[in-house]
Amino acid sequence: SMGFRVGQGLIERFTKDTARFKDELDIMKFICKDFWTTVFKKQIDNLRTNHQGIYVLQDNKFRLLTQMSSGKQYLEHAPKYLAFTCGLIRGGLSNLGIKSIVTAEVSSMPACKFQVMIQKM
Image (tube, rainbow, N blue to C red):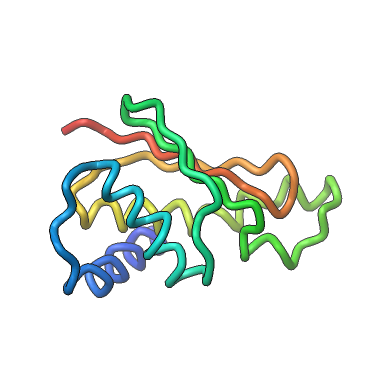
């Protein structure tokens, strides 16, 4: 929940001078470019969607995992480091009017994917 609150605060600060977003996809692009660049100093490498409310954000060199070794024993600890970022995304989207469930997946370090499932209100 700390990540959620931080995400809300960051979005408030980042969007105060931004024009309104057209749609959900526009918001997701903002998260992948502007938001991610401000927080992690790089853009998301890949954004995919099924156009039914599911988005996958892929970061091939996720900053919080680049310092960790790529051994199997570290792979199982990686999700703990991603929980804050999931909250960050969820909080940011929440302040932009989108309720979501965000999960993270790491198959090979330091790459990771964040899956965003939009909850229709």
